[in-house]
Image 1 (cartoon, rainbow, N blue to C red):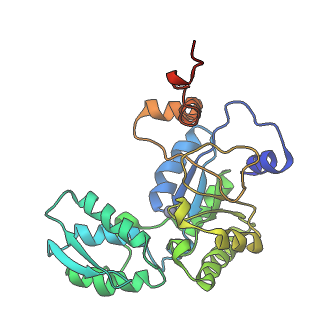
Image 2 (cartoon, rainbow, N blue to C red):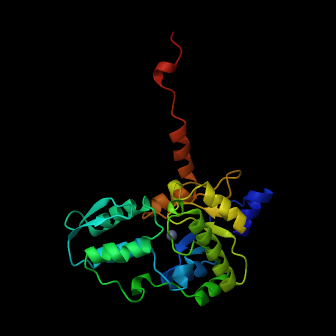
Image 3 (cartoon, helix red, strand yellow):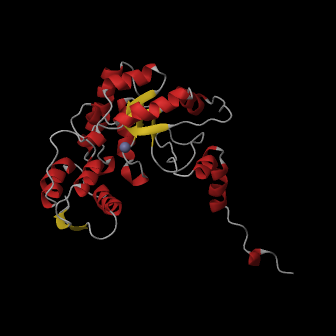
Length: 280
Ligand SMILES: [Zn+2]
């Protein structure tokens, strides 16, 4: 991460074959499984952690949706979204994964100020799911000790908000809290200034210019979104792109060897249409 900063800020040369890996949220297996694989290769991994998850105050709202749908006793229900709009959950139609994605997308567009209260009071109620008293095993976080151990082994650990709520849906006050409190929590636990950020879910519509200003004021020097693209010199340091690691290896290789850049270039440079050649 420090190398990237010097490349972007000070114009350092980009070493050949440069690839950087990040992983978001801070679940236990990111430490127990992913980090040890990277350790075997001597390769650093950059972790963006939800500080409220590591503090065991909450587990992410998007995972709470998955859990509710997997444990529903009622296959369909009409629920009232935070905006008041009605939404039908029908677990008989399509896969659970599709249902979860549909609901998640609907909730990404909603104001998320009270999303955690809403999940318990509306979704869990309507689907007749008992809200777990503790974080379910599959969503348990790594500990702050794990995070410190990652740092000691040469990995990076940085904040990813306190609660994973979509920043663009929050009030300025709530944005300020998410950004500043996650920074101060991570800083006090890790003992250094973790001044790089990743936006929850990270699409262009998931953060806005107010968030970028808040990040600058808080002292962050870079931030990552999830818009599939390469990081380029001269682009905004608060909107650095990342690719998701694809399922298939061929696509992965296409990204890391920059062949994917050609696809992108072709999309923006369509060949001349035949009828634009000069007439004879
Ligand atoms: Zn995330």
